[in-house]
Amino acid sequence: MPSAVTLIRSSSLAVAPYAYAATAPAEARLIFLAGSCPLNDDGSTAGVGDVAAQAAKCVENMTVALAEAGADINDVITTRVLVASARRADLVTAWDVVRETFTDHDVPSTLLGVTVLGYADQLVEIEAIAAVHD
Image (cartoon, rainbow, N blue to C red):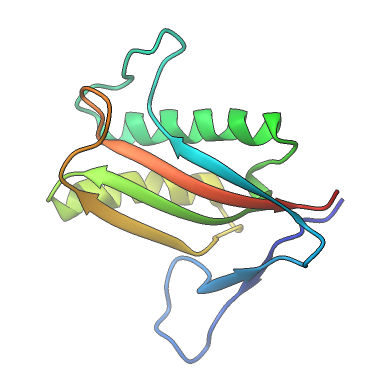
């Protein structure tokens, strides 16, 4: 079944590596995911000190949550990527992992540097909303 998500691009705004907006039809079922954290099955933090490894683990965990809700990465309508760092290079590292995952499905996204995240040694968290046809 085709995705319920339509990405909106703008020729009036600066070129960005993501769509500026996205829509879903009124009959779509929205899926609101908790922030995906870089946690292993035993609850320990994966990739301690490694932004890229943590971003990859967040994406892996997000993919599992999406599947359990009846969706996949192509059903995501927006993301917010949080990185516990004041270094722009760390934000770009996390973003590169997310961007590689989403490929052509470059949903509207926000990338934020934050002071701290909830788990010990956590550097990355990814929030997402998805939309699917029922």
